[in-house]
Image (cartoon, rainbow, N blue to C red; front, side, top):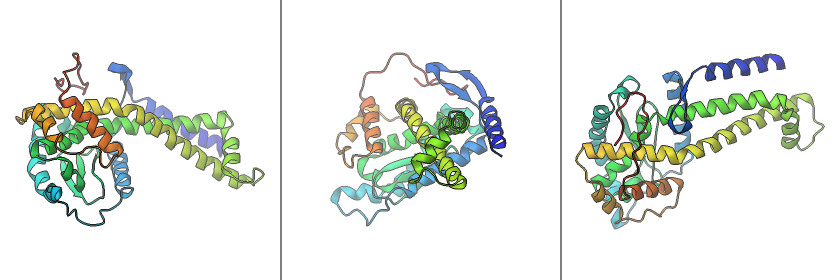
Length: 289
């Protein structure tokens, strides 16, 4: 049975790795996964993010929270225009994204999340950080940028490969026994308990390993999504310096979360000098200026 499990892991890794096409710029490995697989994994990740965010205890009542209440209208007004802009600039995404869907969720902190299918969820407190439509459009466009750049497929690929490698390497390195000893209070437990502990440990190792790898991706993915967002806004006639000025009127340090930290870095790019000539590789998509 153990040999059979190893064989399954080898076959799985071979299937994933057989999708390798080439090394793109910046040493990025390009893999091809079935769109259905990416859609399922990214949808699950999106839902996991939502369930780990606390629900909003009550409606915002502060004077600055008018934007909070207007989020539904702003999403309905701005989202479709950004989607049309994305299809115009990147027509190839039509083969994998039928349409962009925008959903507002009541949570206690701001944020956005998306799936490869084009479903984008906006957490309602985002409204309090976007003092006008231009700022709100930039926040939405950043998430569209992740979909356009196919970051979800990249993340799913990395997660699957890490999982496959862990299940291949662990038996060879005799890590199952080590993990069993770490996860069980009594190192002399029976075979069934040790097997359960080893499997749990390998699952935990896969999760931690993939999270570490994805963390290294985030700055580059954020920069790519920002470039795409800027192009989408320019297509709709927004002035980027005016967008940056709008964000200057709000406190992006509160709450201090991973998402707001990422937004602060993105806003800083709006008023920064243009970087040296650099393009975002999106298969046959036009280069982002």
